[in-house]
Image 1: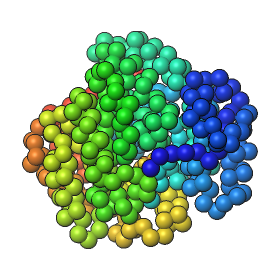
Image 2: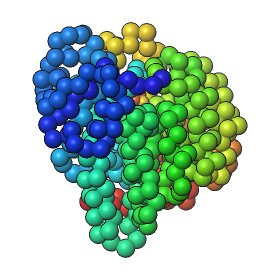
Image 3: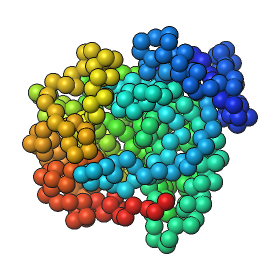
Length: 368
Ligand code: SF4
């Protein structure tokens, strides 16, 4: 699926940037609204359709980001064990429309599909942060918290700036997290060092029913294989794992397919996370995805306020899938994302600091 915005909105001050000009050249026939104000655009979209979140995904709002780009991953929430990850948000919202996407709730008040065009400001900020860090401090930075890192990389080629920049860093790694097959710009880079490209994967049955607009499992794995052959390190997120009667078979098939396509030696990690949601998200999911299978099992709220499958079910799923992964290569790092201490111990037999294959992920959180 190729993205073509129905309308391009340009906020005051965002017009003269190269990314903006480049987009205008790519879509000469697309209506453009200049000096756009976010609140007015949101109001118009909400007035015109009941599925305003879906409609927001078809418009593009170009803006300048005015705060500090680099933030700690929100996995640092009460009761959760976290992998010390930093995020930068170059975009908000996403062209895909997964039924479980937390953005449906998180961006409820501001659902605009925003792309920040002042990437030079991000580069200056990162350069200063990395340069001033104490000796030995390592940064792991992801761009896929509030969007898919690569889905729009063909039309907004952030990676053409980010990858050469991270190639030059001694203490920082970039993680591009995606469900897409948009790897063209990655394959034409000279140097794959300091970059991990990670795919969020689910069995094809779940791709078809719950991950609307995303490429097929085959396309995702083919792109991952191309990146692996180019020399990029690869990450795999089995997240969200969705449990229903018979889940074992389709997840076992998924693990087989992943390792038929990818060499475990250059897989940096496999992360596991089960479907989770805040109460506000459930309503949005049901309204927008009446046929979803997400609520066929029971869920309970945890200390962080998020609902998850019951603990024995999660424990069993993590332990089972982790064993399948480890059977492919015992040296693979397999970690749990946004999970409690009890679940870590139940599924892995250890907390992350005591598992040598996970050491890199749990070094102290960088000070910002
Ligand atoms: S790819 Fe990620 S950000 Fe995009 S809709 Fe799916 S879950 Fe949301």
